[in-house]
Length: 365
Length: 140
Image (spheres, rainbow over the protein chains, first blue to last red):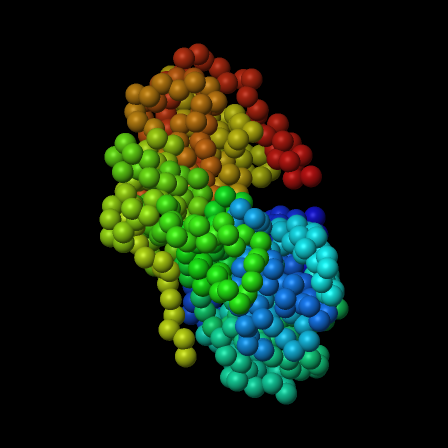
């Protein structure tokens, strides 16, 4: 199992550790639901060093990426970030990712569990292009500050960069705790305002501790992957292996905003298959909340009387919505918000109601 | 009345399963519950993490090892397995509304079901020493 530079720091904070995507990661430091509330009301600090970080350079980098990414990479404004996916020819994703378009490079952040597959896929498709694909996962750590107090906490540690000038899904470079040219992006996986920092591996522990120290007066606490999963689900954000995987494509998952069919983008892997899906979607991702104590869990089936309608792909207790929530796939003829449905839990039925996604959305400043 | 306890305060008057249920003879019937270890694994020491407990109907016939219910925490669902074969004669109905009892006292107040066993004797199940040896081996 791989260790992030913060493994020891997590131990000291008495985190409960679990294996996630091949990494030893903190699932929680305290009660998961308390951690969710901390991020929604104050701020949280996350170790995301397990995520894959890939730098693409060379003169063909954008043209190359436009053949394997679902979004239009060459049209991303400089200094901006877009959601994208790598899909197979059948339109089903091998991963989803964030694409940072810089002046002389494109920087990608991919899922920990798929990093090796992504890198192999990228190298296989690089033939014939003048590009260099560089895995920076081990040389850079990654820390996220999420929640309303994030900017105040991080600005105290940052010079030569006014964080207020970095808009949502934009990035910049600044001096953070004496480290020059650190990549700072206004991104996250919680539905809150916040930042993600890309930190040289030898400085990760120091930056982590400084964030905790500066954040203490704002109520900032370390947050584990358990709460992160609930936060992202509340915010309607997909997780590979749940909302999307080798049999669930981005169109059905409602991720059309990350898929470009513009002619100028040219052909890309999965385009033809996804264009067909987009013309006639047979199933779609919808939200449910249960009208009782049971929590939707991946794999539970949904019924209308005796008719099986679909199945759950994610679920959680949601302290924000104050209900047990989940995402599920049902035929496009079903899933209207407000309609009733039943969850089958080992032969017992739990009443539930379809609801709109996302479950939670904060108005951006 | 003081009960005999192991050094980890696990009662010596009952037997244990590798799936972390306990069973205790009580006259003609047997009482079944889950161990402190099971509660800790599910709730990580936060009693609010337990969200649901599904218990069987009174009258249901169970086989030894059969799943008779489920206990659910914020992040996981665990099966409840019967240590013995027999008929469910009583369930602890107060548990469903008061899951925190399991964190406070899984040995007595936190019992789950009472079974009228088909056969007497639970000696072939683990005693507290064997259970604790099993837990310590599991941790390594």
